[in-house]
Length: 240
Image (cartoon, rainbow, N blue to C red; front, side, top):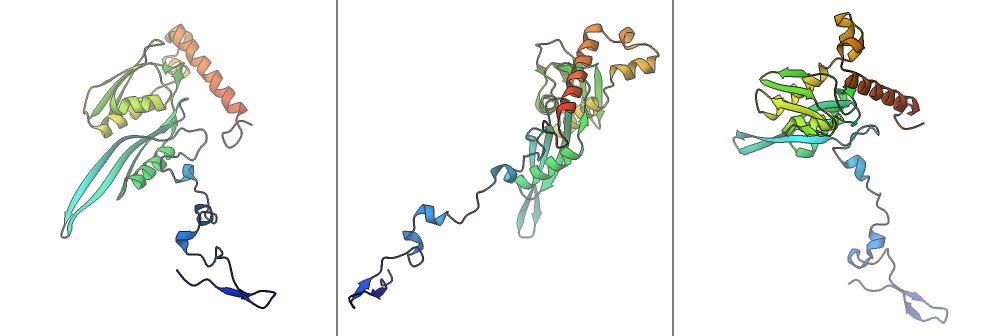
């Protein structure tokens, strides 16, 4: 321990000075003094899964794959992350990121998923009509379900349907079981969904003539709720 500095007193004698925070060793300082100058960490911004948009949920990781490349000095590892993001009210996007570290791969996947967001027409808590999504070797069949059925799906398809806000649906994988193929086939199926007015226009009929009454009413109620939410939201997506 370094010698304690001295000072002259008013009577002319030497008086030892009390050690201050400047001349005290680092191990003798209190924890409050050590952390006084630190900037508080923003955990939300540091999280690679944070969406950055108040209207979206936190991104959801479907699968993480590790790949090893053998080089002269040994093996080099890289990671790929399959990520889905949505708002639980009809918007969903899928992203695929690659990096040398897992958090960076998730962050890249989240950014790609945000760029690929699209709207899914919903009839209440289910989809508006059956659809077969095909992407490469993956094939996923999606069918509407009655209220209370739940999400009858597994793996990548279940995560995507839940992030899109679909709570009642029947799904079946008819092709490859690979996570990437199933996820992209599910996204392709949701993107192929057509609104009841579009289907009626293609057939030359009115929506009431070609769409079941209960499904049509649920779709119109979902559209009214979506438009009301958009009207009451500000430019940044938060309520005005």
